[in-house]
Image 1 (tube, rainbow over the protein chains, first blue to last red):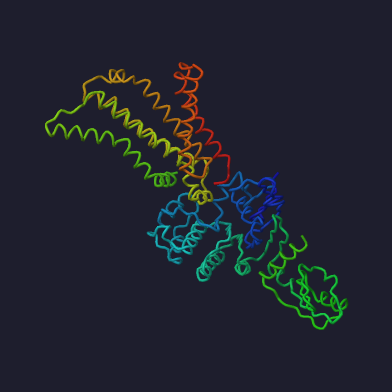
Image 2: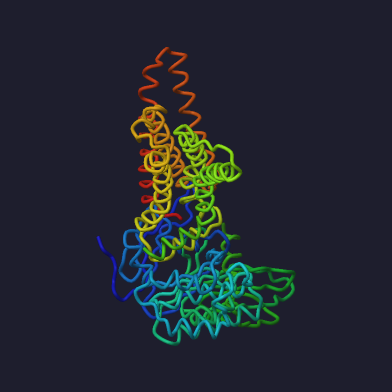
Length: 303
Length: 228
């Protein structure tokens, strides 16, 4: 049965990967529309890389299916790879090749390799075709990987921790490169990273995976606008009780009650004021990193 | 495909040089020694036995090349994890195997061609002894059969181990272990069970069968698995 829809660049239905008794990815259903930038976040070992490997046809799903641009990621993986650019966390480009040789090796494998674009990127990234890969710095290898991922003008770009281990300057240059390629034409991007400020900068929608399960999937803007930290100071003698609806994490320290609320609205404050005797209440905006941390801490606490 | 062939050639370049040296080296050294002897006024030894000896040395040394060609095939790229890079390029596994097979089988056939040419073309023209007589003189049928069996066994089992292991050194070692295990098995059959003629008759066929089986099973395993 085909569940693919041309509207979705990436679609997984009930995708599961087991390693022995452990489920690395559990029943993951995810739909990423064409032309959108999706941030895939989660703690270490949550199943992000395993999901990406299954999308790239490099790991066989135990159950469910993964489709990229309507193509089966397992059985049509060569066709998928023709249309997808992939930048992994660790780069294992042949170290004995020169930059020019890597390009010459990859070029004939792609149907849509764009020589002019490739030459432009070589200049922009200041990559010398005569330099051997083993002589390149980590940042330069990352740039070479980005060049190889985009020079065939893919419709989908998949990044798996691409900026991991890069210094801030190179990371900035790399992200500029990503954004440049994103702006040049309508491309779908799946960006997985622990650098949540990078994800926040690129992604329009966010998917949070935890222990192999997708626990949240929403627009980045909605997540950030609708998630607030409330700092309430309780009056003497007042004890905290049930938090407002949508509370994903809370902490009480003496009279200070901190809580992070998903789906925050003025009614949240009204609830607190009506139910508790408060000296002071404050609403704090959060970045993606704080929201992510609170979501995970809350999950761990309830588990 | 050209791109893959170039990459596999470059990956195995040192091994191919090694293969050339151990194949042609004995001939070059022995012929140079004879020419030097003649130049100094001595008498060189060009008899058929000379050629048979050099052929034997060359093929015995080349057995290491065959095992390494098989053992390197897939595992070498796993060892440095460049197989992961290859894994996300749009190349079919069949094309990858075809390229690796050409790089492993091509030099093997070339090494055999050099040795057979030395034995059946060069030696008769220099010694003026017909090839058939040379062949008969060193019990050629048995010797050729044994070397062919060992070649197929080492190459095929090296290939198999290469597809399942992540270390090319270990894969090469395992191909010699397979040879040793089979050798001990046949020695056991011959001297332990008194099946000497059975062992003699079937040992080469068993080597060929295990070698071809290893290659086929290795290919099937590599084609089935998705992981690099």
